[in-house]
Structures are given as structure tokens and as C-alpha cells.
Length: 204
Image 1 (cartoon, rainbow, N blue to C red):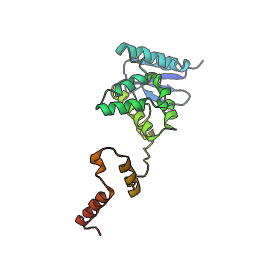
Image 2: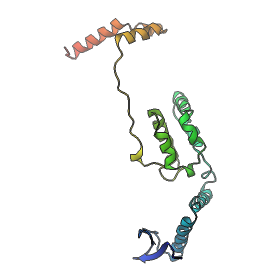
Image 3: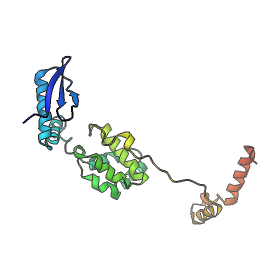
Image 4: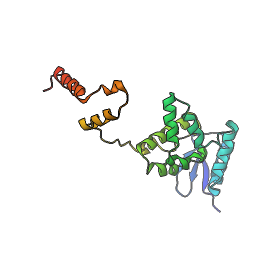
């Protein structure tokens, strides 16, 4: 049976070529025994689809025993340790969102782009924001070796249009306000301030 990959040398550096596609890839080594080992790894990874993951787990364990076991829940817990108390509480609430439940127990090393896309396809602006923060934190800590999604594949946040509140809405807010100091912000006071500001700026 003809091998799919074979080795050749160009200007002292070893390359591997795919006999099916013709694609060539540098092995970044000039040492023949090393090149032969890399060639064998490439052949085995094609013969056994689970071999790549098993080999990666074995290599990572030698550097960090927890690296192949960490799940996204670990990243979520870590993210809740940053910032002020109000920031941590807000982050904790976001992590309890239903959208993140499917990701919590997924191992970092086994995460695929499809895992993120399944969340992003139906995500709110807030979920997208926190998912990207989780991704960047894991990448920054070295818990994942490469991005799950490239930057250009992340959806751009679509914010809702903003407007000023109406006088009626302002009055309803003041009616429900229990703080005496804030209650002093009567609509007429705010309107007078706005008119004075317009006169100072030369507006008609």
C-alpha cells in the first residue's frame, strides 16, 4: 500500500509531501532522525483519528499535569477573581447564564470551533462579550495553545439604538424614587438647567 506522506529534503531542511493533494510542509528541522519521527507521527495521525489528541494530551501532561484536564468552568471561576466586588458579582451572574452550561464541562483541550459557534449563533451581546473574555483569558494564561476562533470570526456587537427619556418617563422615575436627594431632580429643574446650558453654548 502506497504511503500517503513521504519525506524529502530541500536546501538541507526536511519537508513532507501529501501524495494525494501535493501539498508540501516544512518540518523545520535538518536532523534526519527527528524528521523521520515527525513523519511517522503524521502517518499515524491519519491512520488513527484519535491519535493526535492522545499524543497532544501526553505531551502537555509532561509540562502541566492539569493542562489536559481543565474545563471551561475553571476559566469561569478564574475570571470571577478579577476586578472590584461589583465586577465580580456581575461576572458571576453572567456565568450562570443558560448559554454557558453546555461549555462548562468541556475540556479546554477538546474544545472545537463548533462549540463556540453553537453558542454565538443565538447569543445576546452580553453572552458574546463574556464568551470572548473567557476565550482571551484562557489564551492569556496559556491554558489553550491557539485561538478557538480567529478574531475575524467573532460577531461584531450590535447595540440597540439609544435615546433620551421623555418628561413623562422622568416623572415616573421620580415618583418611584425613595432617595430624598434624588427626588430634588424635578423635571422643571432639569429643563431649566438644559435651557441655561443651551444659552451658554449659543444654541437657539
